[in-house]
Image 1: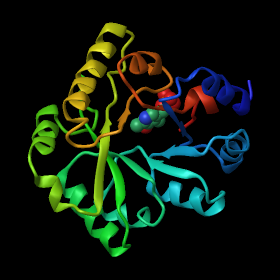
Image 2: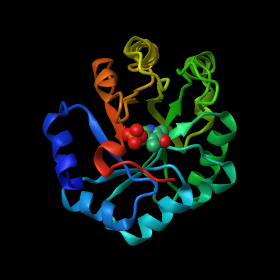
Image 3: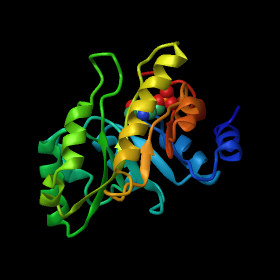
Amino acid sequence: MSIANNLQHFLDKLPSHVDLVAVSKTKPLEDLQEAYDAGQRIFGENKIQEMAGKWEALPKDIQWHMIGHVQTNKVKYMIPFVSLIHSVDRIKLLKEIEKQAKAHDRIVDVLLQVKIAREETKYGMPLQEATALLSGDELQNFPHVRVVGLMGMASFTDEPEQVAAEFAMLEGLYERFRESKNLNTLSMGMSGDYKIAIAHGSTMIRVGSAIFGARNY
Ligand SMILES: *Cc1c(COP(=O)(O)O)cnc(C)c1O
């Protein structure tokens, strides 16, 4: 199967309210160009330098999404062009995005990454911390940052009930604050679990290997 075929497969069957982020981390420019030529415009990367290099080389109507862990000292390299940061998991990072966005005279859309997986290794803020942040007025301190939704990664397991329970937890948090905080994006679901994620209200899936093939790190 070609990249274009794989993409078409998703575009044909995705509900219209679900956006597809093509996760192109580690993949060469030719692969991204092939997806672009097939109509894909949203690409997700997990390393800032790699994303910046691809942004420079590829058409300027691509929307670049940062989906990986962000080091505070590298935020400045993506602020000129990033369209959505999925992985905001701490206040210190919000502060740095605010500072850099202000310096570039723009407002940057972000998602709060919430830890929903059982595993200890996954990034994300604890559910309680995300709840507190959305309940209070602290986000008003960041006028150049717009929190437009939530992101989460489920446990890597072959138990669909576990994955479903984790996605349901994030869906609950999203629904609780959707109206009052003007949220419009619930980013959950990858190649292996996007169907469960969509069944639990995902509005944005992040799909890498099912489009581009397996990655060799
Ligand atoms: C790599 C990655 C994906 C895509 O994973 P696949 O299993 O290849 O679809 C999605 N989200 C995040 C945060 C990732 O790092």
